[in-house]
Image 1 (cartoon, each protein chain N blue to C red):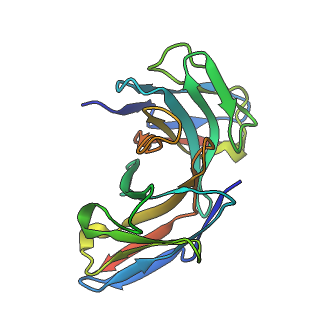
Image 2 (cartoon, rainbow over the protein chains, first blue to last red):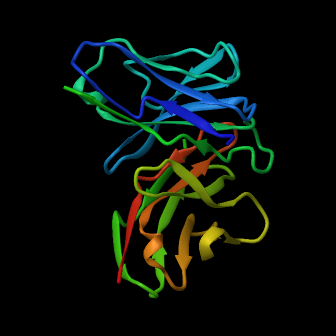
Length: 117
Length: 112
């Protein structure tokens, strides 16, 4: 089935460790993004990309890196994990950005739950 | 930049009762408005959206929302809820080329 695939679903890290959350979509979507979900705070945008080779910061980018070498993949890297990064992470994509009707409807992955001890 | 306030963090309701989940937004320009639903241990999925035109928007599973520009609100309603509607509901706003901003969420619990 077409959609957004995130791996891993669960991960436990120790403070200072690094890891990469993977995100892949097979819908030929130009726009991809990473959100973190924390209780009482909703979803906050970490980084986003409007196409291969183009990335930009969202609302809470500190401590995270991204790259977009292909249209399909948008990995999120934690270089030195901290307990404050314990969260559920969602990758989302949409066909394109802009004012066209329906352009901003996001398709979400199932999420990756990260615990940093 | 736009922001979204969901006025209730939790809404308990009995099965077959009506429900309203409230959402207010702030923005200096025209916006697109969305409601997403998140079932337990799943990602978010679109419930309905307002882009332009009629202020009453109908979505999936019998939900509807009304855009009120003067009150900057986009409240979600359902006349009769089911147990299966138990989920977390997120209001979101998109402003021009800016990215989507989400509210903190409202957890709807439908009791038998």
